[in-house]
Image (cartoon, rainbow, N blue to C red; front, side, top):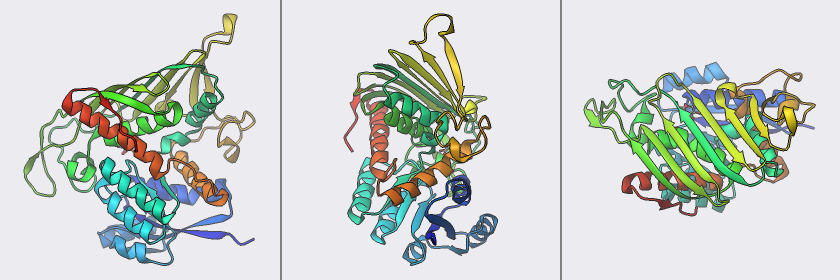
Length: 383
Ligand code: SOE
C-alpha cells in the first residue's frame, strides 16, 4: 500500500531545527508506519542561511516568510522552532490553515498566550504536540511504566535539577542569533522556561499535578550588551530558579535549575522516592534507570542500575533499534516523539504532550515566577 505523505514545513533552523530534522530523517527507517515523512520546506528570514540549512538536511525548498509557508497547500505539518515570542502567532495561523503543529518548548511566553494557542488548535481540530523530548528517553519512559504499575507505592518526594554553565561570562551579549534565550523579549523568561520547563513537564507526566509552589529566582548578571540595539541593557531573564512545591498526590517537590553551575553542561537528574521503590535518572547516563526496590529482601536489597537497552526485556522503544545491550542517545528521544506523533495520527489517539498538556507546565512556570516576585506561596492556576 502506498504510504501517506506527511509533508513538513520547518520554521527556524537552530539547534532544535537540526534535532527535529534528524528525527524526521530517522523515523521511517526505525519506526515504519503508514506515513512517509517528507522534508518539504524550511523557512527563516535569512535566505542564504536557510538555503544552506535546507541543503544540509535535504529540504526540498525554502521560504523566507513563515506566512507563505503556512499558506502552502503542500505542507501538512508546521514545525515551530523559532524563539518563544513567535510561537503564538505562528501556531494560531497554522491552526487556522488546518495544519498539524509540532511546537518547540516552552509552549508560550506565558499562560494567557498558551490558553489562546490551546483554544486555536482545539477549535481547528488539528493534531498538535510540544517537543518536551525527555519523556521519550527509554529509561524515563520505563520510569513512567513502573509508576503507572503502582510499583513505587505512595510517592513522598520528587526532586529534579537541570544545571548548565554557559551564561556565566558577564560579557556575553543578549539577543539575536543564538543568544535570544538571554533576551526576555524573545524568551519570555530565562532558565525557568528553558530548562526547568523540561523538569516540570517530566514531573507532571510522572507524578501528576502540582498544586502550589514557592520559588526563588536570581539574575546574577544584571546588564548585558544587547545585540539588536547595540546598547547595554538590563537583563530581564532569570539566571537561576529553585522552587519547592506540593503535588496533588501529597508528595513534595524540590527543583533547581541554573545556567551558573560551573562545570555542568546539561546535568538533568530526577529522583522519586516512593514507599516501596525509589527511582533515579541522570541525563549524562541516559540509558540507565537506577532503582531501589524495598520488596527485594535480604542481601540483594540495594540500589541497582538497569541498562534500558533490552528489547527482550520489554524496554520502551528498544525493539525498534539495535540488538540488546546497545545504547541509543539523546537524538533518539526526538525520533521517538515523531514516531509517537504519527502513531497518534494513525490511531486517532493523540499522544502527549499536546498543547493542552504543555499549558499545564506553563501554569507551573507562571506560578513560579509570581511566587519569586511576591516572595509568597502561589497556587498553580488551572489551564
Ligand atoms: C539550552 O542550552 C538547551 O539547548 C535547551 O534549550 C534545550 O531544551 C535543552 O534540552 C538543552 O539545553
